[in-house]
Figure (tube, rainbow, N blue to C red):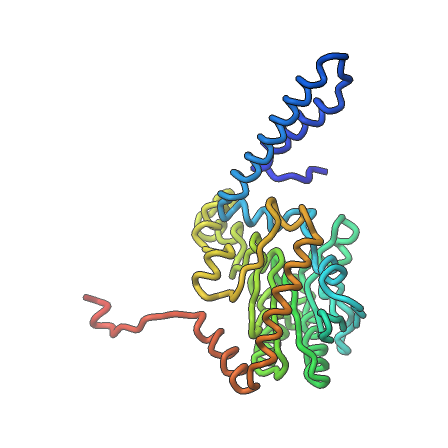
Length: 327
């Protein structure tokens, strides 16, 4: 299976050249020449790597956010948190495996953590529904948020989904209502809430567990009301215009921070989180602890007022009289 992206091809070619050179049986007396050439290729690899990943386009960042080897929610539950104990079921319909929830420890703090989970292969993706939660997934998340509030546990949500599942069954079981209820209830939940986008942050499916006191995002993740392909299909009538849509949507971490839609950007290793999962997990833990410490020091009313204002300020509009608009 191809595990590199198209724009990474120059790196793949250089690495293949280096591998071929280092595997070559060296005749006596020419080892120094081979070593010198290998060092030159290694230097070229590092130079090319820095050049590529320091100048990524929005569409390339979207591709990195979807990288098949990128760490998922369960990877961070293993590397960022301790003592994770999974809880199941919404007590109404079933257990949604696209939404992973449970108790965990973040440093010395007991927390309730939940997040959308994708699969690594076809079988797991079918089981996890490609990370697209059903209504019961959001109801399970809300059930455990209320449990966290009862026991005064901070809530950490991990977002990595293309969106909520749009199938007939989800519509029959009221997916829109499930998400809407989560938005309302999370706005008034008394415990601190931190949301972090680790890959894809798609539409209401992401927002259904995304109302928080602090919204963090990994450097190469994206957060958007619609996917670039969906936007391209509507506005350009052609999914091939997805790169243009990604640029127009302003969905990358830098743009989101500039517009005040996220509070902090979590840096990734050069080349993306999948190049060093443990380092990324450690960086995520550091940022979560920093923001959790600050939130614990805030009085409850001040924290709830700030949470409400944060999301009310996301939308901007301008009113004009009809006569003025006509002129």
